[in-house]
Length: 124
Image (cartoon, rainbow, N blue to C red; front, side, top):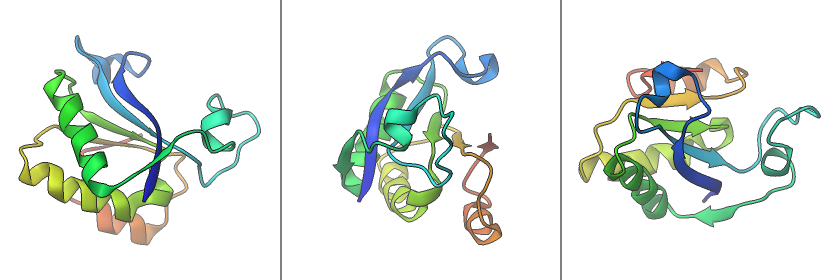
């Protein structure tokens, strides 16, 4: 199971992602980098959040789409890619059609990036 700190329309991202209705941001708990200066330290290192099933994660994505968000923005997703892929399959089957933003620290393995090729629309 993945751990999610929060999910919501987010307006603090780059203007091209936010639009009028926000970026549908899902903040995953924990991070593979462990930066001491992280702006989301309590999320990335202290484990704030709750475990979610693939069904719950898919429902979060669909909820953000229903709120009019312009994309699904996965923040700190590196360590939960398998869970994300399982949830995406369910969400797409249920009508998810938004662009997918992979918002990571940039230290993803080549293997992970190959798996995501053709799935992710925007890398940050």
